[in-house]
Length: 315
Image 1: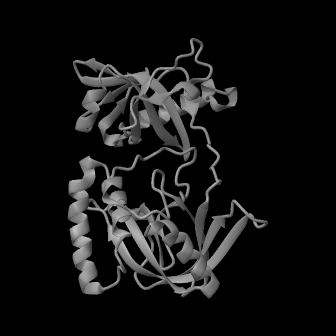
Image 2 (image 1 turned 60 degrees about the vertical axis):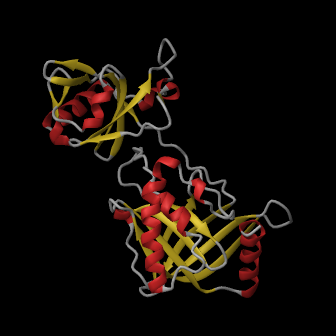
Image 3 (image 1 turned 45 degrees about the vertical axis):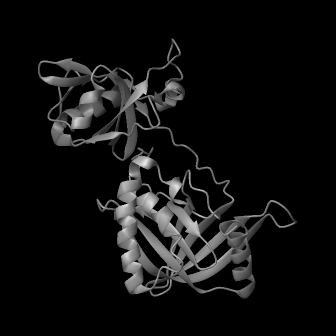
């Protein structure tokens, strides 16, 4: 960990007083303790215990911080009970800056507690990897003529331009996904707006799987939307519902960008206009998927998208 990422003594005191004053939400994630003996490279060594462990959010009213830096967890979520006697990463925001520290969770007569250590670190600002074979930007709202520049990148672990199959949804989420699929298929029969419907599989996958709420270096930073499906007729993106400011039948301009691995041109940008064809919601209402259907597309661009999609999509 670089020295400038570590809070000074005065900064730590300000943060401690901020936590004591109360109502500061935090997230806890069980981690493996740093392997390095001097712990100079702490963040490089901190890892979640398993890939299935997600951060647990704790509201400010369930936290009480004493002047000595002890944190008492009062009636926290049930899932926190399993963190007893484990080391956790505690993350929170202070003046919009993401901070964290590492502390063991102890069991006391009053419940679970942690201690704020001498070292509090800033969450590293990770540079976004922009090396995608495909990405898009929702750049224009046609009705208001407002510039948007909302970046969309492929959803991690989801392969585009490959025919979606049911088994891409983990077994433990398939029951919930099937319920959503039946609901969406029934709607599609009535509305006749889903085309061949194969985009519904990645939509159900996105809306039923849990999404880790990763703390950022800066609070309220706009995150790229997740691309779930694309072909010659539509683009489907997923997002947190609070970021979904789209409405059915609104029209937008979108740029589709492809990385060309062979040939003299390195990238190909396709500009389309499209309408919001359908908005799908998760059962808990926290996540949404927006189905954009193209309304204008150059013939040569349609041919390019069709060939790219059908070369693997229907083989």
